[in-house]
Length: 260
Image (cartoon, rainbow, N blue to C red; front, side, top):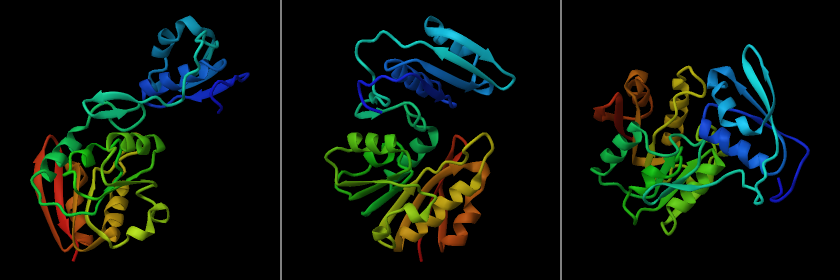
């Protein structure tokens, strides 16, 4: 992808997030014509109205819809990723988890962390766009791990000027994580994902818990939030010697644990 370049065709495979799909399609249309394929279960029919002025052809299948869209007449080509202010002091981009506002779980965890005496360095596994770390005391040394490069860049912008290091890595894959931080963190925080598709996958949270344990030093503290129905307490007990539920609200639980 070269800014200002044109191409004969682009193909965009639509996902669950409408804002992200529209941004990608419009960015590609500023460079050339686009084939946009979107599953029916993601509201494919609604895109017909959104792209009505650009629609040239359309094929409707049993499970998906394919649209051919003409190149836009914009004189200025658009970037694939655009960041905009979503909350005071925060920028983000469509496609990130709860990209324009924090979810209830993150808000609950942030409130709980504000009442703890935290020590650095602090590791945030699955940092998203940096909401949790931005709310921590400014003097703490921070390490943010995020699998989506767009999230890493959002974190850089949102925590500019803070003593922070950003790691583009998958918190579920030990081989991608910064080995120099093993057994070195005083604090690890996380709001782990619990599904990649429609079905809940508690094993994702389990991978976050296991890797949090690996990065904590002895006596280090781990704080996480998760849906109440996922039953993380027993999982935490298998890794940590001391576990407690700090608060429960809005269908979420915040846990604190100490590495022994």
